[in-house]
Image (cartoon, rainbow, N blue to C red; front, side):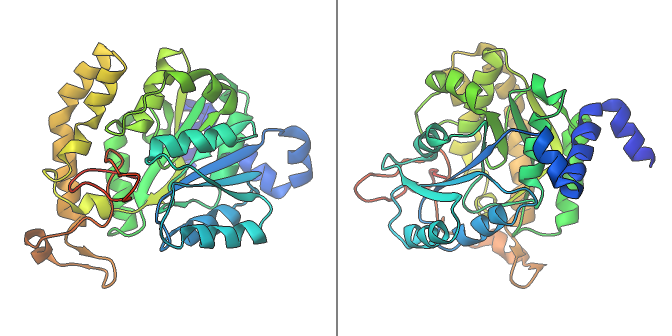
Length: 336
């Protein structure tokens, strides 16, 4: 009770739209009369045959039906298109579109441009959204205070890492004042939503080089245009920790991507802040490497010798180039 009262007093918006979400589940007819926003979820996907089904299952099983689920097939060469097409046949709100230009930036733009709803959300093909994810997004934007915000983002944990509760405690500690929610300066790639009208406003100002952080680029563009973003710690997405199993040295190109992003936007204040933050980011990635690299998700235990054994990258990260003809990823670079 005490924590609930504290949240209500500190951020009444969270209390307002959390109770709105409960009301929608308990009284759907009243909710339909009161809440009018519609929601599209965009899922960029390249060679995700092993995980795309689980991602879509979570999206389809939401407590609030998602009006439109768009899987952007980024010219996959595996069974991803066939798997998605089976969902398209079984669910009228699921569609697959193709974007041949490699990279998450092009795939996101393709999907967001194709969306027809009031709100556009994004998650990744290897991520699992919380059961009430869509409900919380729509309830937030349709709340009285949510009307003042252009975008919403939330917490990202891992489904294949150790101790979910430990992850949550560490993330909560790292959030500081945002542990109870509040206004933030950017969005998190596998877990954010934006008003479609705002996307149309800022899309032309976004960068296209693959070597940037697409989520930070969007966050900076929104801030520069005078739009506000909100962080909800209850808006949960579980991503894969596979890329965090590589050492900070192997991930150095990605870690420095924020500075490239801010420099590309000619935003000196952001460049300065990110340079100051860089050593702490390396420390964070080091801790995550020490935590995730030895973890054996099959046996559910740590195997410390893994820190000293080579690890091949089975996919690139978001700042890598993928040749159009070969669909390959440069070593130690990044794709999504």
